[in-house]
Length: 268
Image (tube, rainbow, N blue to C red; front, side, top):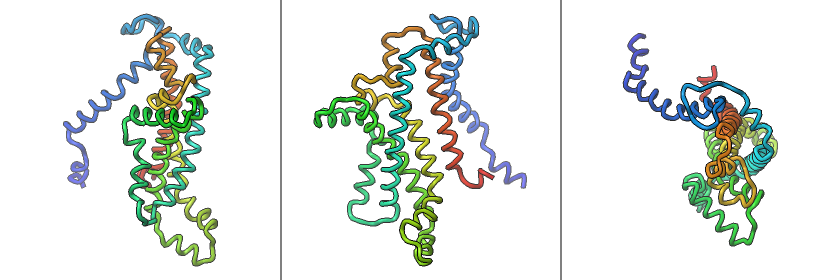
């Protein structure tokens, strides 16, 4: 028993490597959170000269931040809704079907998330200009939907492929039609994957900047607000405060998506 327990433990070099990786990824985030509470708006002195909540009050009083946040939430909500519809329908069509061109459709579907964001953004901008459409709210939604759909599709299609096909056959043999089979058999099986995919899509859409830059026009979402602050900085701690708000908004859906998609043995 002890030998099995020891064999399952990671070695010290592996543990140190994991700790270094976690520190490398998370220390910059902790710095942003820390300096959202500083009393000095000019330097990043350490230790902090003082701690205050003034910058949170100042940030929440800014109308431009509220406008950008409302726009980002609206875009993320609509992009997630469209992604859930398109991703689910595509997953249902491709999960078990075999037809000519199936792999090509799958490749085209995952292409927006596989390509660098700037390539996707330039391609979307070219398509928007070719269609003689002015960039604005709906072009941002369309742009975000292109990569959010992949997130939902990947979650749902993986769950559908793990579902025994004889369940559907048994439902049909017992007299259920297609709608009843979907409602009572398929939907309950893919519900958590669908919810998790939607949460991940919302979190990804909420803080996406590259695609938004190319499809936004004159609309300023939170990512564009951050981008503009780099060139015309005002009060530095306010930028950190808004970053903390964005992290808080995106962290919850990611944690919930992880909880919903983790293996069953880890949930007990």
